[in-house]
Image 1: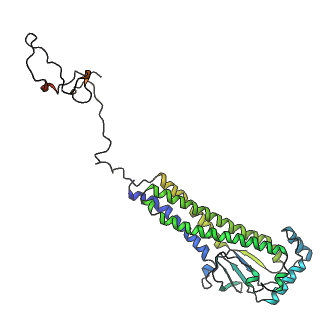
Image 2: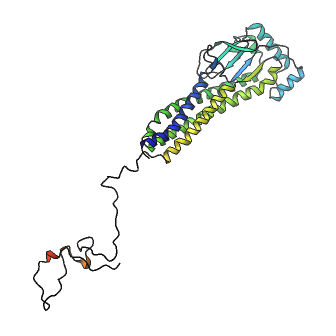
Image 3: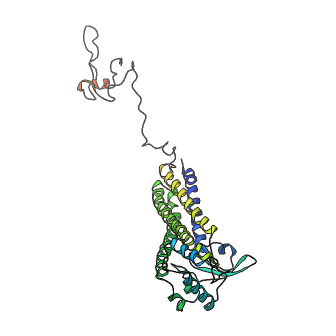
Length: 337
């Protein structure tokens, strides 16, 4: 297969790698621009506070049972009501908050339509701190929170930091994979190096996707039952999870095809050595019942190249005087095998 075939073989994993990179970029651009409806629909979780109320729709016993099911035993229903009541009094809340990789967006809900009005400035290793966002970091409300909240926020902060780093590394390694992929057109060694970076990109993309999915799924399942009783709704974003898992699928497919390009799709032409003088020669087998000059190949009976057998006797056994050098090209006896 020539260079044209090699290029065709590299084309498929190259396109898959670019598709994976685009998906990762879409994840990173979520919740970064208030005027973009497309980017505003890319969020990990949305916190809907439109119908927040300090008076829960469930009884005190039901709320405390829900809290205990999730391992929260140091918080009572009355404490939750007090925190939400002060939250309503001390801050002006937006109708909803959307959490992305680099920041968050907030806005208002009109006629069941969410309209983003503002997005935070992108920040590395971002994590959503509700009391900081709502301007209640130094208020008495935060002091009334139990120790479980502080522990949960520390875990959430650490996991969010790792998730951000994983997405960043996946983005960088995927770009390197695309750049190194040019060398894969030239040789299988280029494919080998590209496959190495493809595997790294796949591992970090998968790790980031798993982390984000598990983190916010646990976040929603742990708090949704309790917060629903106070009019707070948590919703996972579909588009951003579709983008991040599509990045994983494209990255995995790229690894498979990059690996295939190592084993197959050689850039050498099968006709490249046709006129090469150093190519392997074709050796013909000696056919039986043929004559062969004595000077070619091996010399029988240890004779040198210029040694010849005496000519047959003529005229009474006398040997005519002949030059032995004239018999140097004599043929060996008739070959039977």
